[in-house]
Image 1: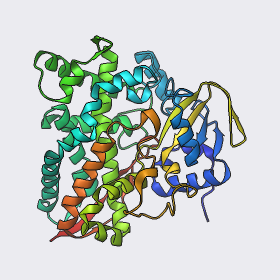
Image 2: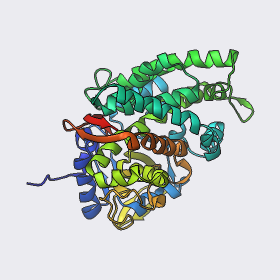
Image 3: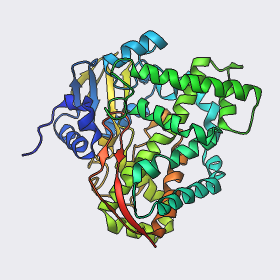
Length: 413
């Protein structure tokens, strides 16, 4: 018997955390209610969009659809303590929470670090890290947890290196990131539902306060120094903006890439002919990496607020209404993406929306693509065989999702 989906399932982290049930829900909504009004218990209501063209339309019009004041679908139990402590229902005001003109001004602070030419300068270092972690996998014998032992750690090492942070801080950064993005998962959340996000943000802040103070006194050639000494409109960056910048760079800078690497390997194991072809063709690297981005779509949603009334597919959206954009749904819309439920590593990647669209398109997209492409270029030629030993488990989340664990057995050549 097939599952009966409802639009309120969008805020159910167990359904949204697993690829099968998540895409089943999106298939149902695209077909039956692509612009749907959702009123789940414990949340403020919102519109939900699941069609590619609608999501792209909203992303293309950032002045009509604002990122503030609501950026993510948090339960009220999360938002209330954050609002009291930080003055915002998100707890942070990072780039993803900002609108023009502030968004563009702060985006410029780190933009040069993530341009293709800057990322290209990191290529040798990234390849060395790929080798380090594939070597580690080989040294572990013939079994490991591919997620916990490898793919959670490799992108973390890269962003820590870019920020100039020490290896001994990696365990702390990983734990805080998992608490921040996995706050709906019983295995990852800090404590009880109310207040846990606030405590995680305070722990992040305590760590980065020391980093900022150090880089002001002892500047070096790293991104932490750039952020610690940044100016906006000729004045030192606002301390809350600065702290938010550090937190989003250190957390989102690796968590989404980890999700693509982990769930991407599951997709490759499910499609061995695709994996074999990629192994033998290095010229596929970048397009294959982008196809895994589309396939996994680790950022599940963003929320926008309408500035004026509009009609969309016969539904009347009012000024002030919140609108959730579901990127995995857009990336499996058959009206735009041919054979969307087939992994095709040679697919033209220009259409996918895994990095968002418009002025909020992910700043780190070029780095993420290189990390994934270089990792598989190191792993696949050395890998003779791999299989999952048990079913993987998924993070229960409807904001950033991916695998929590994937035990595998393997042989190297």
